[in-house]
Image 1 (cartoon, rainbow, N blue to C red):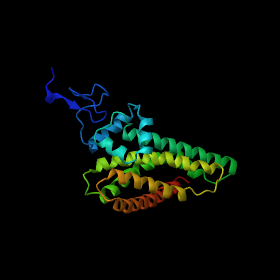
Image 2 (cartoon, rainbow, N blue to C red):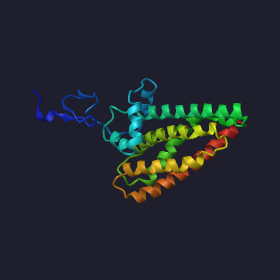
Image 3 (cartoon, rainbow, N blue to C red):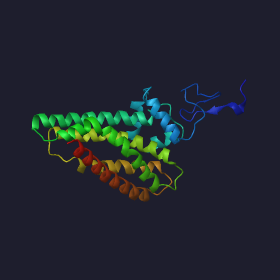
Image 4 (cartoon, rainbow, N blue to C red):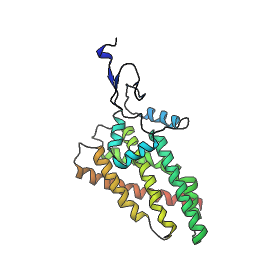
Length: 238
């Protein structure tokens, strides 16, 4: 018979039990705080496994941004796609979608954008892998008084960017019919609004208006840095 002190409650599904793992969902009862070594293990895990929670994670990012990331950090992890694999999958989908769109523009509209197409085909994912730690650092510095460490802010950013990547792919689709459409004028307000909602929900203890101002600063710096790096890479491969 189990001692009452041995009964533990799963943070993911709420089921109570004993031992090291929940018998209902399989998640470990012992939830460790996210750290840099733990994130490195997730990178290794991405190349050897594929989680079944992609659809569920995407749905939660759409209907509960900020809450989803906070719940993941608090231990509700068994149903979610790992942050690094979610990031790589969404970034790859977006890169291939944009490459396909640019290929259509080159073939049917004779657009002189071969370098841009090559960027999305070969360099976009690597570029954003390099930029994401910088985005996370900016966010962490602006919210350094919160309880979250840099690795935890990084996880939040990986999930948030995953959804933004897919949204960017959808926003780019009208370029097939309107080749001169400047999607950045759509992306900036849409992504900024999504980021505001995410961070307001994520940093619940901070007044929403302070989070909103800091988020606008983050997004402005991110877009400027993104444009500079993209233009630099495209010029290098031209």
